[in-house]
Length: 212
Image (cartoon, rainbow, N blue to C red; front, side):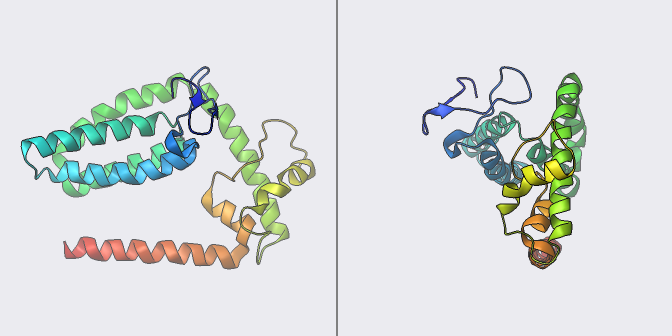
């Protein structure tokens, strides 16, 4: 995140929305992939942190690992994962350790300050995403049943940008919204299977929670 160079692939890192700061991709070589992987790992570590049923040395290891993983997650500058991890933290604290809510609120202050200081850059980035969503929704409208093939929607983006007369703040990328991405790529059928798959595991997780 500090050198601007990926030693594994021997190529430069992506620059974040903050000028001069690079997005850390770790050994994955991709900031978003790293963020999603580390987001899950961080939540697992935080669960161990909240259980707090360890020896002194074990606690130190859990604390340090949780902190360094959280720091690595921050330097990916992947806002979607930041939001989802924040929501997961809130749920875990409310369910398991309500006594920590005051510390959670204190931790939110610098985060909100960071967002406020970089709001104009965030808004420019958001415009890019809005254009991505608009183009992918149009792709879905033209291919509602099966889509254009998972991942192939990006190959049609330039065509649909032109169709929508979108000329600036554009990128050729993932839709940055999983449901919209699935709709454009796999249509109603594929997206229905995707949502049923997620719903099944949410139901399973709730059942496990009730038993605990």
